[in-house]
Structures are given as C-alpha cells and as structure tokens.
Image (cartoon, rainbow, N blue to C red):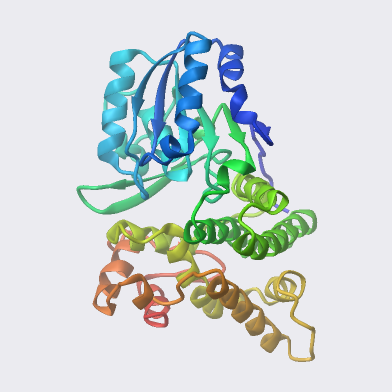
Length: 390
C-alpha cells in the first residue's frame, strides 16, 4: 500500500427533505450574499428554485444568480461568474444541479480570487491558493464533484476539455436528497451510473500492489451500483436504489476507493477529448464506449485484479480458464451498459472514424504526454483503442 492523505472536509446532509434546511445551513456559516448557480432551468420546473428563493428571503440572505450551465461546462460562463462574484462581493457560491454546475462553480470560486484567466489552472500553468466557499444541492448522481477535489471545464474557444485537482476545489457542504433524482431521465440516469462506476473502476485498475481493504470497498461499491442501477431503470422512484446510487456518486470520487494506490484514469483522459470535441456527447456515454475497449487491451497487465472484478462484481463463474473468465467479465459489464441504454461504439455517438486521429492526438496533448497507467497509452495505443470501437 502506497502512502496517502485522505481528506474529505465536505459536510454531507443526506436524506429526504434535507434541501429544506438550506437557509439554516447557510445561517450556520454566517453567509450574507450568495451566487446562486444552476443549469438549464429544470430546478424551476421541479419547484426547487422557488423553495431556495423562499429560504433566502426567510433568512435574509442576499443573492445574485447565474443560470445556463451546460453539460461539459464552459469557460465563457465561468468568466461571467467570476465577474459577478467580484462585483457583488459574494461570500458563497451555491451550486444547484449536477457535476457540470458544481465544476463551473468550483472554477468560478478559484478564479474569483485571482486576476488572470482561470483556464491556467486547467492547463496546470497556475495553482490556486484560495477560493470562495462552494455549497451544493445535488440533483443528479453522476460526477461525484460534490466531494471530489477535481474540476473539469471545457474551453469553448478551443474545444479543449481539461481537468485539474486541488484541495481548493473541495466543497464546504453538500445536500443530497435521493428524491431530487427521481425525475432525472433514464438516459441521464444511465450516464450517471457509468460515471460512478468508472470513478472506481479506474482507481481499482491502477498501478501498485493490492490494497485488500480499499479493493474490497471498491468491489463492493461497484457491485452495489450495478444492482441498484438495474432497479432504478425499471423503478425510477425506488428510494433505496436511488439512495445507493447517490451515495456511491460521492464515495466513488472522494478518494476512498483509491486509498493506497496511484491512478491515472486513462479512460477518463481519452473521453475528455471526445466530449470536448463533440459537445453533444454525454461524459458517461463516452466512458461506456471506451472502457471495454481499454480493458480488453489492458487486462493481461493486471490478471488477478481483473479476475476479482469478473468473479465478485460481474458474477462470472470461475473456471480453469481465468483469461476467458476475465473476458466474460468485461463482456458482462458492456452488456450491462447496453441494457441501461448506453452506446458501445463511436458510431452510436455520431462520431465518424475520420475524427480518430485528431482525438488521439489531442488526448496526448498534441504529442506532449503519454498516459503511464497499468498499460502505457500513447498516440498509437489510443488509435488502436478508438479504432476498435468505431
């Protein structure tokens, strides 16, 4: 087991009607002025928007609002948010929505404390040293950004999608009510399930020796998410299944399932180029297409870990041919993706094979890096993976 620091300062308010405690929570932190940040307007249809405004009024909290966050959140809106924060002197950003809204809020939070373009954080040319606190009301289980130290933003001028990690990205608090996820569409629910699984899959299949306790947590989380995922696709208002997925959303990306291991998340890096270049592609859908192809390329570098995944998560019966068992496990996960309505080819994402060289080139930061995971993914390997799923 490698040395590690496990730090999760975000306070979680989990369960039914917890969002109704927002005013009380903000008062406990002595918040006076909020930037109310949200997405495309679904919170207005659900009534959550009005509930929040009532609590602002009841607790005498001033606010300015900035809606319009899109999937693959854009730098241009981040810059608007930074300008608002500086002009209005807000002391907390309230992100209401999913991972895109939270990441946009995080970028605004660190960007409001500097006098340069926050894109320099995404390119690792600058390091944040301060931030405006961010609070969250989560409405979709997917990205885990409510408890993670990561922030992913798309530069809408260059179509580059980049992420960076920093403890300055940690949220102050997050409100998680599974009931708020009942109305999430089947497709977005499925995308979220894939993203949650991938955050742990890419930690589990990573460099280093076995970490028995961390491994067991990771395997158990993935098995639980698949079981709950099958339930919610048939019964969207099953509270326990929604609760399992929502809590897994947070635990999968707060560091717990990777303690003691070094991880690169090669598949995430490849997918960032797909959804950065093709804005209509949902992150989870891109991951569903990519991971089985990567796994078939990588499994021989981690036979024992792939065996445990096949047997303990996917329920593949053990035989004398462990390599065949592993491939059945990979196939079984791909079949699960299909069952919940996820694509498995680039064609299903409306991406022509002519884009493959550009995607691979951009994934390597235009020739400036390789991804040294359990297998090294360079330009040629990226081409092979992408060609196998065209």
